[in-house]
Length: 386
Length: 106
Image (tube, rainbow over all chains, first blue to last red; front, side):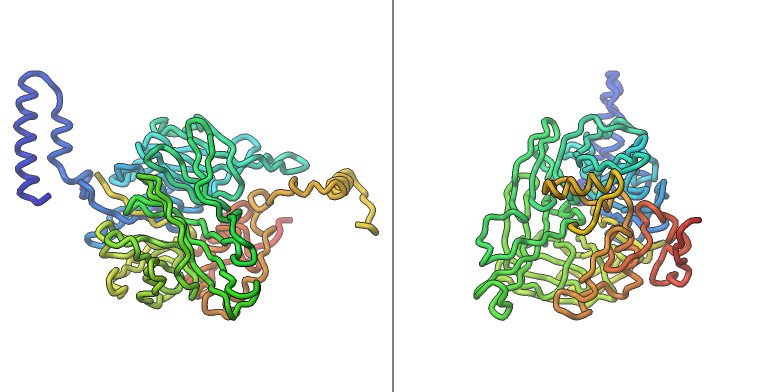
């Protein structure tokens, strides 16, 4: 939408609003929101921001248009892990903090805390390993809880569970439902149909209303000949794919073309499972040669066959042909990667204290943002502020 | 276990569990007692047998491994027991000289 259209729409909306006031109908607030393209000074209307968390414990919001840090919010508690899940309207950032236990929901336009939940209680210590997601309608927040009861003479390891919070419960929210889930779930995401994707040894989905679990894709337990394939080693750490509406998880495997163990004839491959969070369509493919480590993939919004990965290199791959299109050496290790919805700019973060900015076409470094401390295991998420 | 005799109640329970092959009752401990219980040897070299694919430089990776309870050697556990370990050093690659060792409390 160009500026002229915005002004015309605003003028029209103001006229309708004035007319509504004359007949006693209070719609002026809605009109004001529509007419405004900023919220608390931040560009809205779908404007994109990159978010991350650093030590000592701060949430940072970067404008993708200017690549400037626009807001920093102090996060309560001790740093860790710095996971972030965004509300669908891009306004509330749910941050995992206090040694991987508590969640705080920040209004990113003013740092106001709108939601909080302390997961540990009495003698039960509850940790969530990155696993946090918001429902497609924004009404529910999900975490996978790993509880342990600390007794005087022993620790009692309890069953992991999916915890469901109502985001409208505000401060000191408690789970409204819990359901048992597998151990070792670290990476979760929400689908438009209401299910929550559980990324662990295998990929599953749970209905957060009933607790019913279904298998999406067997990985650790895949049904392939063991003399032909090595079971995949999935790296299910950070959740991403919000810029294109997908959940994507890389894994490593070996295809034995000769005798099992004969590395001279084997293919060492990156694979991935990619789930369209709108349709539920699942893609699983192994084509990219394992030439170096990546922690995460992100998909090029303009060409789904192109993936970008980062670790000690920024790399660009064609998953259809298996071709490594481009490789850009990095200054240091970066765990995390994300990109803008137009597919033009890549942001690489995590690990240390700087976000490295790259042109998606050439992979050339075009900027850097210094932050207050190390990102360590934090997420690097894209928010579209509506 | 042939030459070891269980002495206290807990040891007898362990002995009984192993004799019954109840291995499924053994669960990961990393979320309970902290990172130092997790030692993951074998990662001193990368998958190609070299150092090129390890995190670079090591200082940048310090918190990334300690926070997630993962390290090929043992570092202070920031998740449970030594949460203030990095308080004076928010940027490990610049401030690592300020990071103290951790000693057992008396």
